[in-house]
Length: 144
Image 1: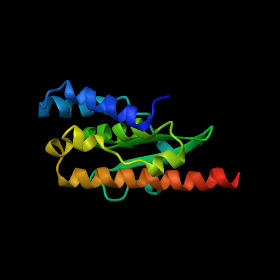
Image 2 (image 1 turned 180 degrees about the vertical axis):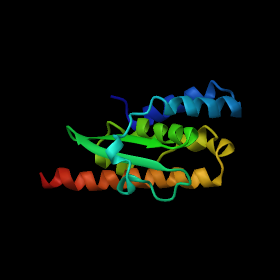
Image 3 (image 1 turned 60 degrees about the vertical axis):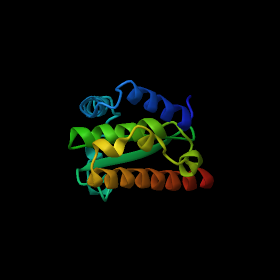
Image 4 (image 1 turned 60 degrees about the horizontal axis):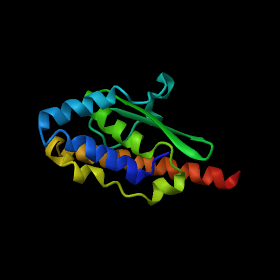
């Protein structure tokens, strides 16, 4: 199992191969969305919607052997790709690791160049929601 830092480095390396080509980067992000572990249809409700995103983003988390596993979906291809990057980064990690982590890959891949302010705010909201899930799941593991 890769650490968050290793997963982030993989993402940075993948985007480095695109050599800063914005159109290729956006297409790649949309392709990544197609590989996203999908949230079940019944979880596409108001309870699982990420507040602060311009697009609709549904996010769920479960604990599997002490590790958080995320599923998600979005109604737009780019946003679905963006959330897939976060799902990839955080899934399979302990709640404590997620809570302590600072996501660095967006600045290292120059993500702000190809997503606007609205999507940047939504991306931050996704990270916040994932950390809230990790916090809730960490209290669940402590009480067991």
